[in-house]
Image (cartoon, rainbow, N blue to C red):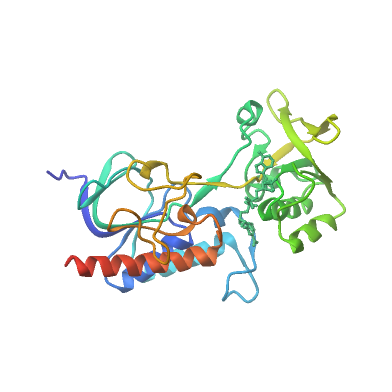
Length: 315
Ligand code: NDP
């Protein structure tokens, strides 16, 4: 029996990155009257990035947060019902599918599009947790400003780490970049930019052991894995930029995930192992992980949902 906090929709979209908003644009235009819940970080990962140069259509580049505002506005203009709230539990055992928002409100949906993205990974050090918010951060763009003119460190060697190191180099006096192997994973163009920035100092084959400081970050203890030599680098902040974890936890009892936690979809589609439940964007893509590929798969999810609902006579 539905209570007053239960709402029934044709199409529920969970997540507000490029995949979620694109799904909302297409689903609205197909008259599915989608309801979209944004999650705890409206706009997703792009809201914590700076310049986006590789999204087609923005000839002069665009700031990540501005781009996501554009996506949201477009979805709203098409008629999507966009709300703030976090999906905390699901029951996909039978139609209509049940999704609880903030552990309170229940949404019953004929089709569900999951576009919950991925979140930053942490090193797993005790000191990292203790000093989180006190100099330890996973978002240089959010927190770099607080360390203007100071020495900071960044862990990681992918495109994110390279991008954030460059961002920090414009604000901070020195950026100590801690790279665990003797090479970087970042694209060559980003590596070159990092290597040619005088105030970025790269530490190769270097493991981050501990962040030191009582109430705030004061230094970082590292070890060179080739020589075994340890070193303490005085820094005011440590930025962690070591990749991401798919946000698939609440679906794990229902959907097939791969060993890293990404939702498995049938190749060439956004279909999951449960009919009527679709997955788009970074929560199901560990290979491409781009805004444009996420948006593309959001479009696919809305088309898949529309076809499913029509075939079932639900639309
Ligand atoms: P990646 O998975 O590409 O890189 C993670 C990096 O962190 C690797 O260098 C990895 O080292 C390192 N790392 C992982 N765990 C640890 C650890 N415990 N200690 C130290 N280092 C660690 O993640 P990114 O977030 O950088 O990028 C994700 C995807 O997004 C990529 O496909 C990337 O190309 C893309 N991207 C594109 C951008 C753009 O085009 N402008 C900007 C940002 C990201 P190791 O190499 O040794 O495994």
